[in-house]
Length: 446
Image (cartoon, rainbow, N blue to C red):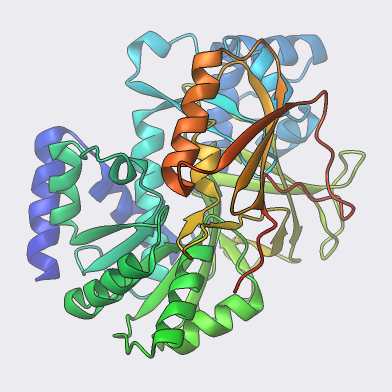
């Protein structure tokens, strides 16, 4: 069945001019070959040459500093001479960070709150989107799954929550890839029973889930004595997977659990795979640095700030992007040039709780704040089942209608009786540990 679906999906992509299947084959072949390092070096050189000649922001940096990237130059040396790209710079210089040839590209707008709660607006092109999809499939393959085999995504679907339908192309693509979507944003006891029944009926080989959502589903299944079919593996993302969560998920579902790390700005960055300690960076789409407070390379095994260079989005290149997370790089990279993140810290997503026990993933509330141009930074706190507070740092006056929209959608998820307050602040500090939590629930688990 999987081979038939693959053939149909390849035909579907060919008709639509989509290159995802081709990239999947390229990545899988290169992943196990000695060509990995040369492919990555070539991509980095292509990216920096493009930035030097076609992106106003980087062109000025190259000219002002005398940095050059010729065809015979070491791209790593040039990369490390460039300053970090911070979120304030990304917001302030968004036009100058766009490529001169943007009009010739197929592109779209994206946005992210990231792990720091500082929303940024991004331009991403079609090649970035397709190569990101290919890396997603590569990471699924690391978990032992072929595309076309059945899988379930326990994911954040605002469309389902607001009764909107996916467009027919997306629905057809999901059908051909044998994917079912379950909504992680609203998990009532009845809905969790339905999800467990769906898993037992559909028998997916793979579950790809928000970390906190699949943990709560595992707790519910255990509490209810609900026997659940075991997939071949579970991939968690969009939140910290703590050891106690991994242990519970693996025990209830009877399969290995693989953590995955990424962001909307640069898509997937790294993932766990068998026989490796830590999160393996594919390096086909992203290159990672870990730096200390002065911006110098952190010693291997020492925690520092993660800096990402995305290699495939030429519409709006993110070079040495300070993503807002912290992590630890292993040393040395293996003989094939792989980078391995021993740890990623600085991200935490809480589940919000209704009085009746319904769970709402904290990412639902970050999604409410996407595409709000007047917003610089945010934090959402559930004080009780009766009160939610949005702490907001503004760059412009917040339109009352948009605040009403946020309040309405918050009450839609948590209940019309919930009090929604807004606090407008000059700054939102990090916690005592230095980590920033962008959603916090103070309601204890039962």
